[in-house]
Image: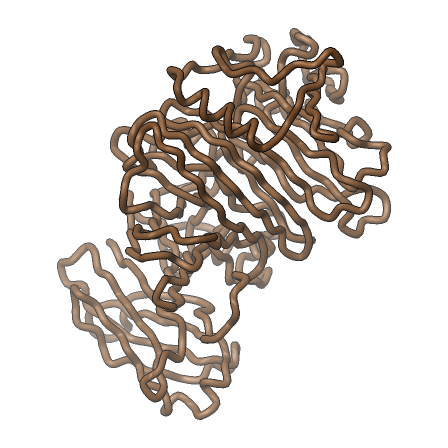
Amino acid sequence: MSRSNTSASMTRRALLGGAAASALIPGMLPLPSLASGAAAFSRDMVIELARDLATRDYKPRNMVPEDWQNLTYDQYRDIRFPRENALWAGTDRSYEVDFFAPGLYFPRATKVYSVENDMAEPVPFTLDNFNKGKLVPDLVKTAGTLGYSGLRLRTDLGHPEYKTEFCVFQGASYFRAIGIGQTYGLSGRGLALRTGAPEGEEFPDFVKFWLEAPGSDQKNMVLHALMDSPSVTGAYRFDITPGPDCVMEVDATLFPRVELDNVGIGPLTSMFLFDETNRNRFDDFRPAVHDNDGLMMWNGNGEVIWRPLANPVQLQISSFVDTNPRGFGLMQRARELEDYADLEALYHNRPGLWVEPKGDWGKGAVTLVEIPTAEEIYDNIVAYWRPSEPMQAGAQVDLSYRLTWGVDAPIEKKLPKVLNTAMGRRLFGEGRVVVIDFEDSPLFDDGPEALDIHTYSPHVETSEGVLQRNPATGGLRLAFSFDPGERRHIELRAQLRKDGEMASEVWLYRWTV
């Protein structure tokens, strides 16, 4: 993966964002101007802006002034946006919006507009709206022309004194959200291009935002974004509803400038450092460190699949071929503080993110990219849907899907899920031992002996397996072994069955040296 993504990942983890978007785009179709300074607005207008932009050569946006770019990490963090200066603060509107300054890791700014009664007005930038600590040097203000690096949404989520933040858009096309009481973790993205490719990844930017002003009792917030990159433009609409889960209804219209043969739809970006499968590689007091511990898939055939994440020693890409997937996501199943023993990062409290396609997405593959990393400040996991057919240059591609940020995937629980995977050297003899814990289920009421164990590998022979009740979880534990010999890459599969029917999720794993 390219160096630019490494920087953006580190920044996202530290500052709730990645690299920023644009100032005015040369050659862009202008908004229809009115004497008042406002302009007519609609989603169709954003689509037409994207369509027109795709007919023109890509032109990078202007950089912010050099003194902003030269800010140190501590200086940038000392520029804070106070709640009392938020958009719609002091009104009866149900949402408020904070903004992030450009500079440092955010060398290009994006414009923001407020929409009321189908009219859009710019939200001007002024440094005076920020609180500047003693570390901040004198900066060129360029009042009203600089723009922001991103924005944060807040609404009433039960705090007695102020509206609570729950969603951030900042950097390239990155965004992230949480359910009530959760801690920020993984990110979503508008689009992924050439992830893991030798020629390097391309990162489209959200270059303009439009925020629809909500009513006093409105529960949802609607946000529009214009996307641009060398290969594609796009018009996005996010209908966002916070709560115990934060739910986003996403409508995207894409206009490829060139043929897109390595494109990721509904991309998710996360961090996985270690757990019980690779704990021996890290000298750390914590038993596990990760934002998410598995890729969950509900395929077009109705199988629910759990693939534990890995931090490999070499880049690895896995493709799970499917037709019309019902959903996929990066989830966090280890949910106790003691699973991580981290009183600051609070990994047990981080959300999963589930992608639910609307309509038929056809043939393709849920794709998982796992990138080696030695530190938790870097995002090294990417998952997305990759269509089997390229998106053609000059085409219009319309997509809709739902994103749910929360503790569990929002699907009906029919089969007991995998709670944990552990792995290690066999105590006696050659090979490796795999231990899989399944949650308790009525399917297990007749005891382990009523179930059939199915383990398989196309590369090695697996043992028959042993199934026992686990008193700590109430569910069942499956243990089996395999001998990798000289092999450095082995695919494994396991599932429980009862009376010929599925009695657990499908567990998949890629073992590597």
